[in-house]
Length: 177
Image 1 (cartoon, rainbow, N blue to C red):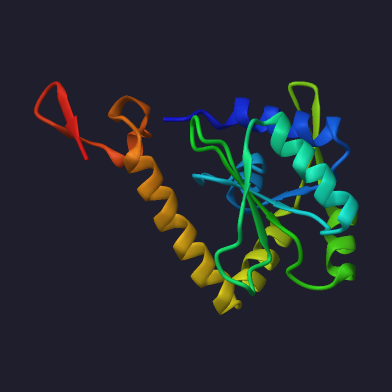
Image 2 (cartoon, helix red, strand yellow; image 1 turned 90 degrees about the vertical axis):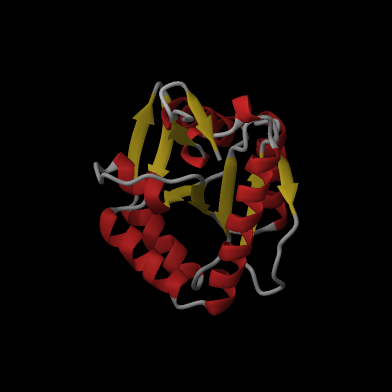
């Protein structure tokens, strides 16, 4: 199973080195606040401006990831994926208006992970953002398609590179999908 903290440090470092301000949201942010949750991706909230899109490309290069196309035209998610291990970052560029982002930014907690600064939404804002995302049918469809694609991608990897969550134990020494 992929350990998330080293990956989170790499993400924070790439964001800091390229001056892309993004706020950690979703289950990873909840985990930083002590919630007993698991996730297969890292969700971030940022402003989609031409300059920030340039910075996002630099972040993708730093992480050796690619920026994937959107699956649904109404989607407001920009996805980065690193092919070698399936690391996936979802950058939500707008769930509501500018003032919504500014409010979340003003309340965000600053976390220092192995010397890297990372902004994380507060637990109340995580719930608020999750509620706003759940109300969007287009985002739900896009998320479902992305999850199916991620599972298909991981199933296409050789068995030794798949995440353990896709395997089940049979007998004493064997596993299968």
